[in-house]
Image 1 (cartoon, rainbow, N blue to C red):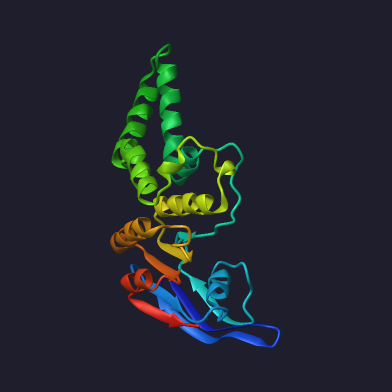
Image 2 (cartoon, helix red, strand yellow):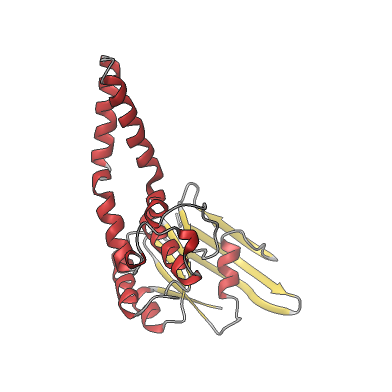
Length: 229
């Protein structure tokens, strides 16, 4: 079963037909690039896939429970979060487990209880098996690769420029490691060394992705399939 099935998709703005009867499947681990002239509908297609626009005709079927990561450079970010705190949000469930583990241990310091001891042991096993104690190193590697760490990991995201903020959002998206990445111009605001790092990261990425990029060398090195718009 494919991750995504698009059938006879069409969309237009007024008399301008952008998409006309597009059909394709995206499978696990497949890398897909969208090619076409500026204004030909590449970004529109991504927005339709993510439900931001409604197609005029055709079907879009995502695999149930598939995790989807979408690079939205304009998404809202809670005020007051530092870069590190924002990136840690990619692993919010694991940090919640750690908080519960610490809470139980605090209780055990004054009120020993076998049931709580067993709960704490089970939580610790979950944290160890998930690689929780290596998360900070993982976050730092991705942040360094995209040039985010040079901004200062304690810097508030709200104080960043648009380009800096876009890099931080991309870093979190990569850390989340979803089943499929949907990326519109991910190399914007990245310099040559950071594009090279991203290229290598995506080569090793286990999931699938769909990418729009004006950077030809980046796109040609990543894609195993192409859709023309």
